[in-house]
Image (cartoon, rainbow, N blue to C red; front, side):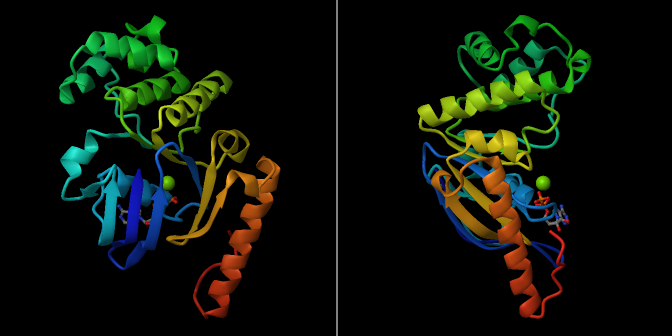
Length: 249
Ligand code: ADP
Ligand code: MG
């Protein structure tokens, strides 16, 4: 479960996140859409305890962060833009290294389990450097799943994924939903991501300007239309307020 109240993040004079209040219940898979610079990665990083909020409250799995960051981290799986893997080590060595950081018991069995889940179990001895982008991303996903987190936070997980890896990712979301985990991921790829989501958020300029359930759009094309409409509307309102917001989404 994810809860934020009046969350804000400022970098110098730049407000990356403005007064954001959001609840995501366990068992929900939520897509975070929005143009570049909207604040998606900032929100995900704060939830992952990798960035500190400037103001407001955040709780992940009912643990307040940043105070309980260490405890919260044990319940969170995060995959960001970088895979954070050791290029010269094998898949197995990478997973073993992270498993030790989390002090996991029964590590070899767990490595095999998550490796099967993302379809890398036949390649555990391969060096990361020799893998395609899609397979590297699968290893990053396996690493994030290793400690059986209750909240999954993925930043643009579809980027660079081939068709098969994309199916793996969709399968992970379905399993997470079934297990009652919470998933929040950012994406530009409506075609692939919307199939997997129960709910969509649209961010613009540090704010959530749309929050709707799966029933509010018919398909990816329907969502793309809604997305364009909401962004245009928000830009118009910003212009009316005499802001400096750009028209272009
Ligand atoms: P998105 O992921 O939606 O593209 P980000 O969360 O990365 O958006 O960025 C939101 C805003 O915050 C942008 O204006 C970006 O330039 C700014 N920003 C993000 N991270 C930093 C940082 N570490 N230092 C300064 N500005 C940042
Ligand atoms: Mg981003």
